[in-house]
Amino acid sequence: MNILLVEDNIAQGTTIVTICRAKGFAVEWAKTGAFAEELVLSGSFGCILLDYVLPDCSGEDILRSIRKRSDPTPIVMVSGQAGIMECIRLLDAGADDFITKPYRRCHVV
Image (tube, rainbow, N blue to C red; front, side, top):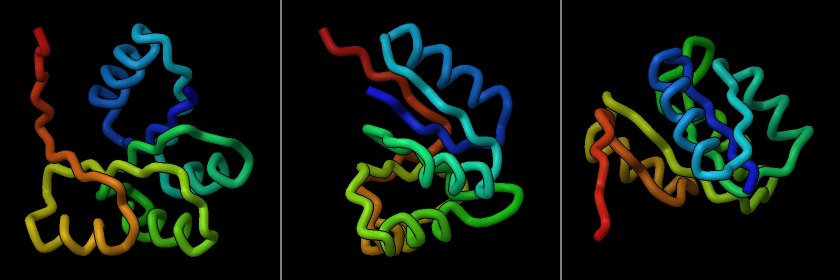
């Protein structure tokens, strides 16, 4: 599966890319909303991990743009700043799931 990661934090992005690639996923990493939009238009992704706060736009803007084109790609919104109301709004706008930062590792036995 090809994953699009949209994350401006270098440390977090590097960790996510490293883990995903170690698990066998192909990952494209966009550090800005503008680059993410270019990648979405030019590629096919099995999933998009989309940060809510980006340096040049809101992850919500990207989410709405993708859904406006009727793109069914699963989108998981990620944020350390969004509260419950933002989470509900993003799910209503078309996000498939929402993960809060800091991430917690789940270990399945």
